[in-house]
Amino acid sequence: MRNKVNKWSILPFVFCGLFALQTSCKTTNESSTQRPNVLFIMTDDHSLQTLSAYDNRFTETPNIDRIARDGVIFRNSFVGNSICGPSRATMLTGKHTHINGQINNDVVFDGSQQTFPKLLQQAGYQTALVGKWHLKSDPTGFDYWNVLPGQGHYYNPDFIEMGEQKQYEGYVTTVTTDLALNWLENSRDQKKPFCMLLHHKAPHRVWEPDTMYLDDFEDQTFPLPDNFFDTYEGRKAAAEQKLSIRSGDMDLIYDLKMEDPKGEIETRMKWYPGHTSRMNEAQKVAWEKHYTPIMADFKRQNLSGDELYKWKYQRYMKDYLSCIKSVDENVGRVLDYLEETGQLENTLVVYTSDQGFYMGEHGWFDKRFMYEESFRTPLLMHLPKSYSKRGDITEFVQNIDYAPTFLDVAGVAVPEDIQGVSLKSLFSSEKPENWRKGLYYHYYEFPNEHMVKRHYGIRTDRYKLIHFYHDIDVWELYDLENDPHEMNNLYGKEGYKDITEQLKKELKELQTLYQDTDKSTF
Ligand code: SGN
Ligand code: CA
Image: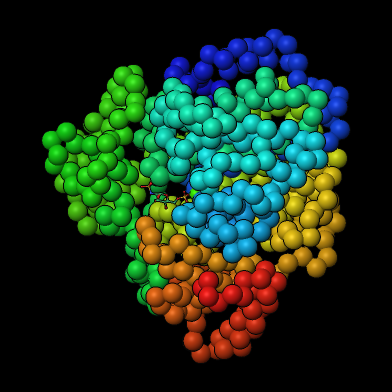
């Protein structure tokens, strides 16, 4: 199945590049084998539940799993603010969002500040960024950049290449990979080590699969999460969100593609031009061939209530997993390229997502909450040959740690003001001393789409304490050992006074450590 080629997606110039690669394999070069390359692959909204190195209940991701099989997998990897722009700014700067300024998706990223690509560039690396950016200001610190405007489109996407916008024919995950491979093979200075940020749009909402994978999950029925019908008792913020599959938050047309030409299916998104609006004829034909019978069957069933919600969940899973399928295939293409050109062994390959995602847990899609599914993010690394560690890493790591890790691995001094910690000490077989025992989190994007309240909190090995604030003042406490799905808010309950006080003290210490003490920003 690897390297299944979509006839719409291969760009002529890339084709030349890859053809040349098969015949010459010219890229290995002595000077770039000295300092390790960094390939930082990040997807948008990829949940741990749908990455088989973590969880294979729903799908297999053999290519992404290769990274873990030959390298390391972080079993306790988290973000500091579970949403796109904030997470990206954190990764670039190694600082939490109240410090780098990107507290939500509305802020324009201050590109004049220190970032790891700039520091690597100054140290002689060739730096490149391809794919989703979403930080509004033009990228800085890159020798080459070619990014999707805003969220980007799945079909025949526009890209902005160093300030110039143009449209490419094909499917976004494949086009993004083509552009990355083209830069690696044909455009970069081969004498220098590279740092490439390959950032996919997929599997972001509205989960439009590549036409060639439309049928892949059609015969499967996915188990409903045990808490799909959560009633949110004792959790006011969870009750008031707008990211539910069990409501119009997940739209039958916009999200689930039931574009009824007769107009008999309800939608809130009247403005939406439709999923096929950017497609060419062949794409449109394949799309309609797939969804038209599904829609006919849906109308025939005339579902409502719980039966409708269960149907929505199945459709959501199928579309989302088909998008993951393209991601996995394209990760395989890049790994193959590095392997075939002899560069893999000297490259730090990182696979992560800007945050986790709900696959129906609590009845939800989307992210934002400090609850486990969206607080966690996948993190897998193929290490350069000098590092011996393989398999599981269980220490608490967070996206503030990526920038110092990349700098450290590249042999570049980590500036004092970076808040994260280099993960390099976890790449040997010895247990590091005094590793962090608590994780800090702060989410700000309220009021906004999905209406997740502002909150901050601490997670330790066993407990999680969250404070929801702004238009409410609600604390939540979870015992993750006895209640891993965070259904039972223990805050204020008998027997939890001491642990609550202890956690509040540790939370304050983290706020002091990370300088999140200016209450006017809360
Ligand atoms: C868009 C989506 C939201 C999503 C945000 C943030 N709506 O606004 O569902 O939560 O992005 O996602 S959509 O109608 O545009 O699909 S993020 O990953 O970019 O932060
Ligand atoms: Ca995201």
